[in-house]
Length: 158
Image 1: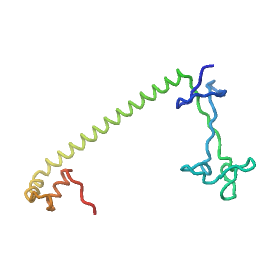
Image 2: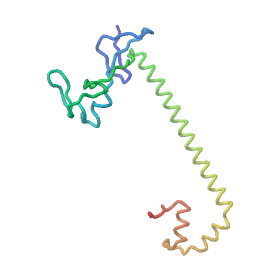
Image 3: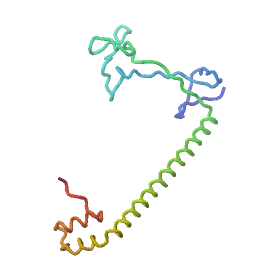
Image 4: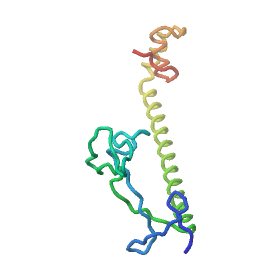
């Protein structure tokens, strides 16, 4: 039998089982979301004593009974050829997604620039009046207002 790999590319050295479609799978334990490691610390189960896990509280975890595992899930195994094909199609999908995101961002930026140009054209008279009130030293209210409107300065914190 050919060498098998998991989806992340690690080699599988055991004996695989086969699903209904005849594809090789392995069973991976699912850690208990109640008592297993959370942020690097075991909050419920402290260790094993006489072959049985014990807890900090003296009570058993009601999700898994202090086993630390609440079930198993099937994980598909791939040959090197299948894994290369799967990775290639995933890379293609990611490239398409990235391209669509780039196009959407460019369209949003173009729409924003068009909106701003339309606003400036519509309110040119008002913006010109504000410009006449500016002193040019940058500390006056009207100078700060114009700088904020042009995006050259962030508004001061409250």
